[in-house]
Length: 226
Image 1 (tube, helix red, strand yellow):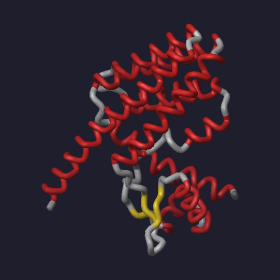
Image 2: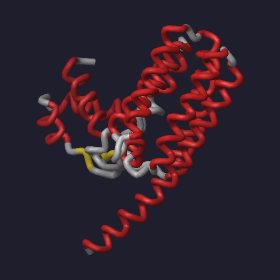
Image 3: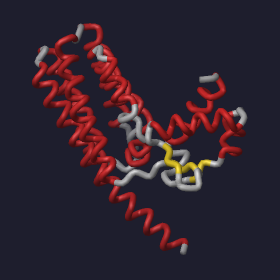
Image 4: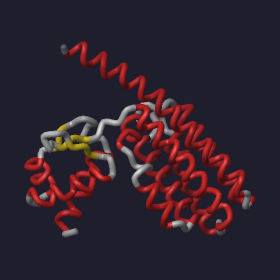
């Protein structure tokens, strides 16, 4: 892949993941090329790559759109995450070192600080949460797991609905991280796997509640503007 294609891929992917491009929105090559500072050819390459990550869909007329996932689609993603990240936590518990464990504690401390702000700092929460899970995956030392999880963790729906999470869900996430740290400290692989799987399942239900709330809110806004 050329540098231009990589730049276009990174820019467009970030626009989707951050929520700047909304689910269902059409992706116009000319506009994206101007935004990325490249020609249309690298944009086409980038869109094909994003289609393979299920972030972009193409219709019968070959027009590209931001993928709009149903709740059933998201349920499948979280189910896979629960299995894969649970296994990663098991591997990590067996391979955990004191330096990484200390780094995880510091990251979760910063995550908790973000949660305890009023209002909560959602952007910082998301970044610290991503960092926490990335450290676990790193110490698990499985390239196959890392590859499989790379297209499941950073979905645009997470960013969009995290802003609708209640305070209780945010605090519970930090507390579950503390339980993981306790399991890692004990080197208890089965405990770590169980906590991580439950952590991901609980996150799905928090997401589903926020998704439904957002759907009701969007429908109400459409009625007002009609």
